[in-house]
Image (tube, rainbow, N blue to C red):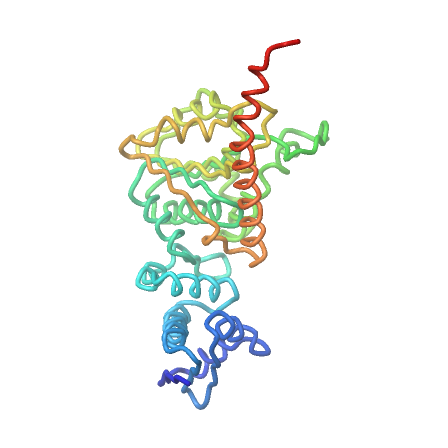
Length: 339
C-alpha cells in the first residue's frame, strides 16, 4: 500500500473538493483507484499503485489552484483536470488560472474553464478574424460575447454587432406572427440570453436603443461596412458560401469578427454546402485569420453532453469506415455488364 499526504489545505477548499455527500472526491477515487481521506486540513491518499497515488495527488493540487479563482469546483472541472493529469498535460493547466475576461451583471467572473477555451480567448485577442469551430457546449458563442462586452467596456470598439442565419433546426415552424423583431427573436434568443447575463436586461435594452448593440439576422448585413465594431456570426454552419463571403467582406477599420459554428449540425437543405466548411477550406493560411477547433474536452455543460458527443463521433467514424469498406463492392457492381 502506497500513501501520500497533502498538507496546509484550507477547510473551504476541502469542502469544495469533497462536494455534497462526497460526490466529487468519489470521481477522483474511481479514476485513479485510490482512497482519499481528509483530517484537519490534511488529505491522505492511499492506493495499491504508487503512480496512481501520485496522479491523484497531482489532480488534487491542480484543483486547489483552480479553487483560488473559482467559487466552486463542479463535476465538469474535476473530470477535465482528471483527463489532463492522466494525459500528463497538467503543466498546461496554468493557462486557465488567468484573470477573468469580464464580470457578469451579478459580479460573477467569466473565465476560460479549459485550456482550449483559453487558447480561443488568446486567438481572439491576437487576430482580426477568428473561426471558433466545435461541438455544442464548448463556450464558442458565450466566450465570444464576453470578449465583445469586454472590448466595449474598455472602449476598444464603439459597438457590438451580433448576427446569425435564420435557419430552423429541422422543424418547419411556418410563418411567425408579429413584426420583424418578433419574427427573428426566436433565432437570436441565445445571443439575447448571453448579453442579458453579462450586462443586465435593462442595460442591454439601453444599449440596443442607442445602437451600441445590434442583433440582426444575417440577411440584413448586405451592403454595410462595419467600422470600429466587434462582430459575431453565430451558427455559421447554416450559412451558404455566398452568405459567408458577404459577411466576411463587411469588416471595416478597427473591427474584429468572430465566426462560431458546429460543422456536425448543419441544417441547410440536402446537398447545399455549408459556408462555414467552405470558408475553412479557403481561408486557413491567411495571416490575421485564426481557425480554432474545440474538442469534446472543452465541453462545459452537463457531463453527459461530452459523452453524447463522443458517442455520435464514434458512430460517424464507424459509418465512415463501413462506407470505405463497401466502396470496392459498389464500384464493382457499377462496372458489372448489363444482361
